[in-house]
Length: 73
Image (tube, rainbow, N blue to C red; front, side, top):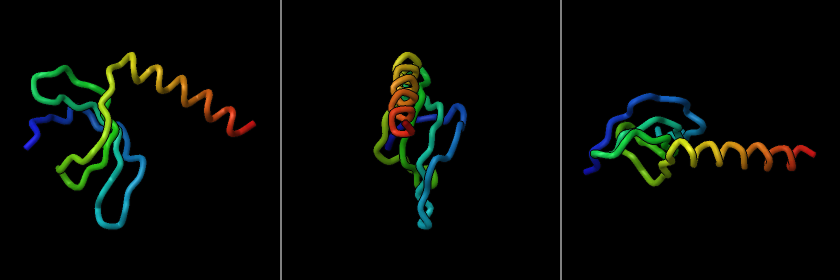
């Protein structure tokens, strides 16, 4: 079983009627520093997802802004 602590809940960005949600949180996994975490959750059970350092999250944000501007154009 994973050893984690949800430091801060940021947003629920999706979900299904069966209770599975897609969330963005700040999560501390084991002994590692807290990271921005995007993954599916069912209650308190973590599913597959991705954890990003602050610098990685910033690059993702910049890339998404560019990609969304291109889609809207």
